[in-house]
Image 1 (spheres, rainbow, N blue to C red):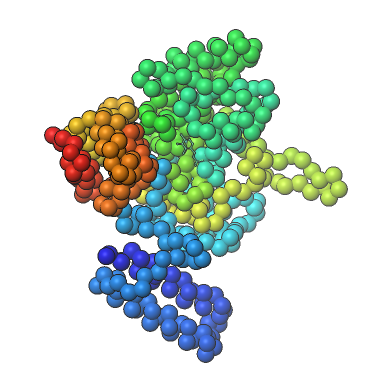
Image 2: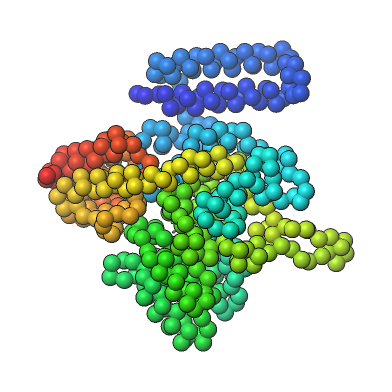
Length: 454
Ligand SMILES: *Cc1c(COP(=O)(O)O)cnc(C)c1O
């Protein structure tokens, strides 16, 4: 058994225990007898663990980091195909940030007037915000607690009771809830026969809402890539139609910002929303909300009320953001990943080549087909195995779980347990070696169960 991942955790955790002694004894770091002994014991343990890592030697591996909280070894020991997890895997820099900035309000160490997160210069939060706006080619940006929090901020600022907002037939549930939470109603734009949201269907729906309610929709929010098919929707054309009616357009980039190039001005987006934990190599909860000069004042509105007793007011705190948004480790980790994220979007074509290769091999398994649009414009892909693995499942004693088990044996994970008809997967971020291992594994499983492989 390969114990190196577990042992690496063991060494890291031991060093955290060591760090605790440094905290206990600050500022002098004069250790008493008990502390000296502990310090020494920990160092011995680390040295032993390092040796175990070097020689891949098992001993008594730890399983938990605290009471019933397991170590998470998914990314160290497996190929993880779960499409919602691929783009959110942390960079080593982000993991270091989590260790160093984990203390609660750590980011507030050097928060000076005007006391707002996006003005902090040390660490360089302010600079990060401005680079992030450039990265998206938008005028203003804020880091928020996930794409959903971005939706809610926009919905709160733009929608009133009785308003309608348009979303895609495959729009994310959190967008629907954000609209509902603002007291407005959401209506859906239907997919066309190719499972794509088009400008034509958008216009039809605008007209329908106008006819039925006597008012135009107040917002149109469409995913560039949806979570059901991973298909690319006609965001640029939809933005144009929205603007013909003077309706703001929200580009939902949960699956795009941070993995592929996104240019807000080129798209014509009034709002760009991204998900840090889905696509920006960041921990949860993180996301981005970017907008234009025109809308910045509205959605980043600052407080104007005054306390009737105290007379207090809260300066330039932004109302819909509840002042400061993402603090501490998640924000700093997102910043730490950013240089690599900026670089990786330039190599999106490479990622498409990998999914293309995977699909080509996958289709060599008789009965397999692809539900997502082809050629792929995203690595997140829905495949159909009704005429291959699902047939095996019909007579297998483990039913649909046989596929999950076979993949698991080969250290491949992230496929929904029990599913054999339609599977969602993403090859994002895998190396070519891993892609080849993956395709061989699928073919191997097929052959083992009597499915013809070309
Ligand atoms: C994942 C996803 C979201 C939600 O993102 P969070 O950052 O978790 O709030 C929204 N929209 C789409 C299309 C998604 O795929």
